[in-house]
Image (cartoon, rainbow, N blue to C red; front, side, top):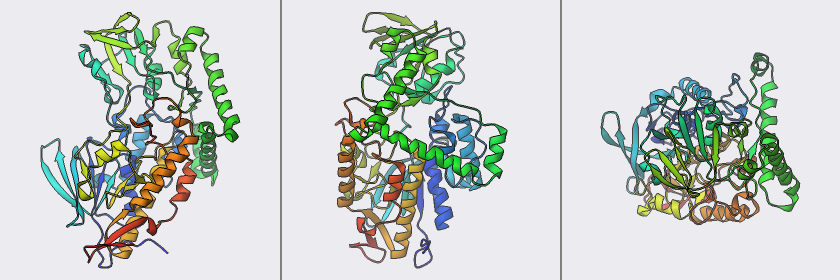
Length: 509
């Protein structure tokens, strides 16, 4: 039986989609293709779509997931130029897909949703918006809201660098007008952004001062060019691309075992750590530097990064690796805890993002005046990261506990989106004005995640953006992508309650 595409009176819900990155695009496309629903509007703060791949344009920026897995399963690209695509190519793919499905006609660029509140009497969300180009403000009433804002969007900029008097910027706010050629450059941070950035600029700068806040596990990456021959096979020979896609997917799924602390996965985990050690030993001959770059926590506790040119960049003669804490910033000089000082021309901050506090207080107000930001900080109790009991008709894509440490998040986005589509179809079939996950269903999910995380490396004793202030893993899904899909392959009405369009009291669906 197919999905119900309209209410009994022939109408369809009005939908608001916040964000025009991969999540927002997926929501819009699936509403069109699966429900024939076009009564939606996309609000995007930036002047273009793309989300992460519009904002992050620093040198070397790209996906650390293989290109074949970093695309919509329903919109395959046979023209990737490399095994791991750069940001420009990913953004061009997004634009092609958006044009194919006429998404540009539905996007309101440079328009921010500043406040969204659920009105029980209306059985709708009332959203305040501001156009940052014109200054115009207004409201929109929506029956359904998709939140596709993403976690890696608000740069984390430590206050201590406010006193730096020279040019400075975060990697997500790259200044393309400033030429780094023959400049003394300081890079602060040692996560994925820094690991991509440093090799890309090392040959250009006069001196590179690299400030490592914590060491990172690095795995080798062979970013090979994809030849015209293989592109031809992918596009014209049946099943070649499909097999390549599936083999890559399942190979990546298998790596999840390396993040398990269970005894039955000890060999896989030890082998992965040994591979990282061999790679580090092979590329860094200096014992002191190698010791500085060796992580002292279990593999996977923080994000593992793939790179084959990061270590070679750090051993260059004009590169200095600092592991001491930055204690002072004055003028264009950085002072370290050992008393040493470095004067630089430009400061680049690869200091990550506000993952645990992506929502500001007062922005999303759910049922019974529940401020979602306050609930989120305490520990988000969601139903598979897709919806909260306090937010009827609001669906999150790449929400809490749906990010990954081993595979492509696009698979998680698609799976969550498919479930939201099924929920909307169920609403229309049962003639419901609203639908929400039950508190019990949300609690059961969060309790299970907390229990299962005890057997994963991410719960080990180290700080990471996976955890909130209480040390609870709120960002990651604990298992495989396939397991997430299996759990959500069909809609489960018993986990939801709703209100009939003709009634004002809740009734179990």
